[in-house]
Image (cartoon, rainbow, N blue to C red; front, side, top):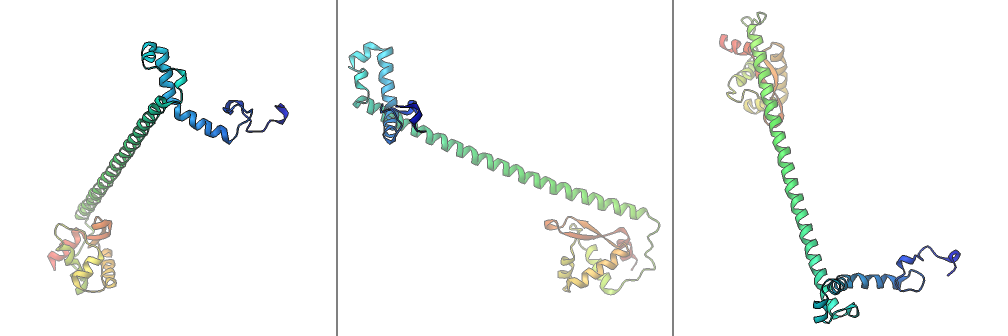
Length: 220
C-alpha cells in the first residue's frame, strides 16, 4: 500500500486480519482475541512452565481457541465479572458509610455551634444584667407603665427557665395582636425593662426581662 494513500484508520498495530488496513472485521477479530486471551494464556503458560502436565493433557498451541480455551476463558471472565461486582458493591458501601459519617459529623458540628451560641448569648445577657444592676442610672421608682405594658413585662417575669420569649409567644399568652406586643416591647426596651436576646426555639429573636424590670415589678 502506498504510504501517501493511507487512511487515518490504517494503523498497522490494529490490523489483526492482515489485510493492510483497520476495518470492522478487525474489531470483531480483536473481540474474539480478547475473549480467548485467558484460555490461550493459560495453555501457553502450562506448555512453557509445566510441559509434562501439558503433554499429559495433550494441550499445546494447536488448542488455542479450542474447547479447553473456551472453558477456561468463560470461567475467567465470570470470575472477573464477579470480582468487578464485588468491587463496585464495596465502593458503594464505602461511599454510603463515608457519606453517613460526614453527615453525622456535620450535624454534630451544627449542634455544637448552636449550644455554644446559646451559651454565649446567655453569658452576654447575664453580663448585661450584672452591668445594669451595678449602674446607678437605673431609677424605676417613679416610672409608670400602662396596664398592657405591665402585663407584657409580667409575662417575661413568669417565663421561668425559658427566660427568653419572642413577641409571638407573648401575643399567644395574652391573646392580643402581634402589633400590640411589638409596640409594648419598644416602650419597655426604651425604659431598659426588657432587652433583646437570642436563644428561643429555632433561633428566633426574643427578649428577656432585665434587672430594672424585675425591680419595677417588685416595687409596683
